[in-house]
Length: 80
Image 1 (cartoon, one colour):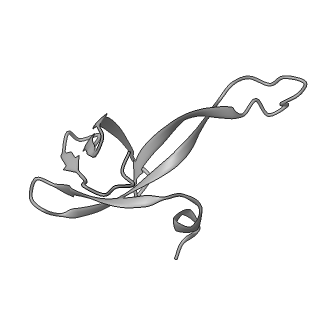
Image 2 (cartoon, rainbow, N blue to C red):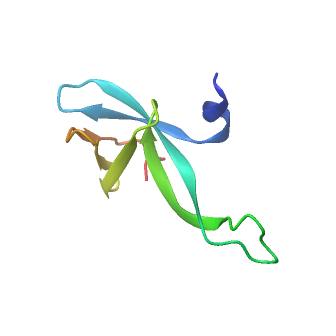
């Protein structure tokens, strides 16, 4: 099990040809440095990424679009 699998939730999504893809939900961070938060890391919107690290656009719950235009769907209850 790799480090990402232990830290971030994952789920399976399938493309139109029935191929399975592992997607991970990464926490978002945003902000600027302040005296109380010198790294400027406050929680932001979560990101969904492919197992290889490419960002995926969330279209709706369980529906995603890859950077190359491939549509993915998931019925996993943990899929955002």
